[in-house]
Length: 178
Image 1: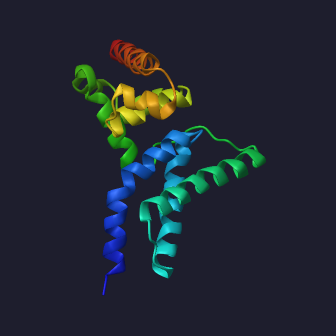
Image 2 (image 1 turned 90 degrees about the horizontal axis):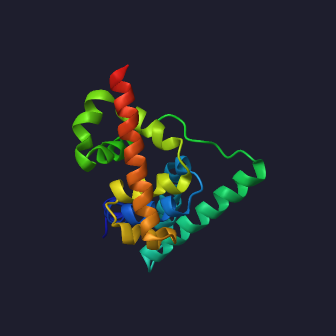
Image 3 (image 1 turned 45 degrees about the vertical axis):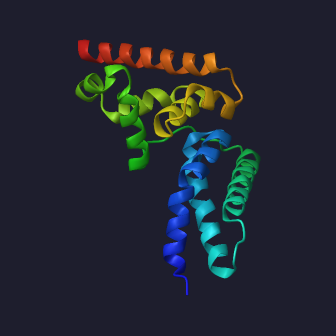
């Protein structure tokens, strides 16, 4: 007999990045991604324990797609689209730490800016820029892959990354001068 808990854990670990990437790419606000991800896996867990699922990946992605759609339909009806709040969990801190690895920025950022300041800088940016950073630093996607995923030009992706890194460096320099 199959241990459902360990089987669910295996599925979760194998599918997590793909499901999160889908949700990040289709969210209007990255703050909502964690909630939608949790709801997706909770619904999947309930269904997984009730009946056998033939195509797990397809089923899971269908739940994610429906959760994103449902979340924003309700959200827009209530007109309560929020902006980023405080950093909520280690995943986001990990993401900000990854940003610091680029262009020898790590040393300087860790000395002069903490992760929350970098994240707060990114929160001021348009959603597409936040998505580009998440896909590039968290998922380690190439410029080309990000461009395809977000349906934008590769040069736009590069521009988003490098312009924002330049702004972070400038902010860091101003922070050091204070």
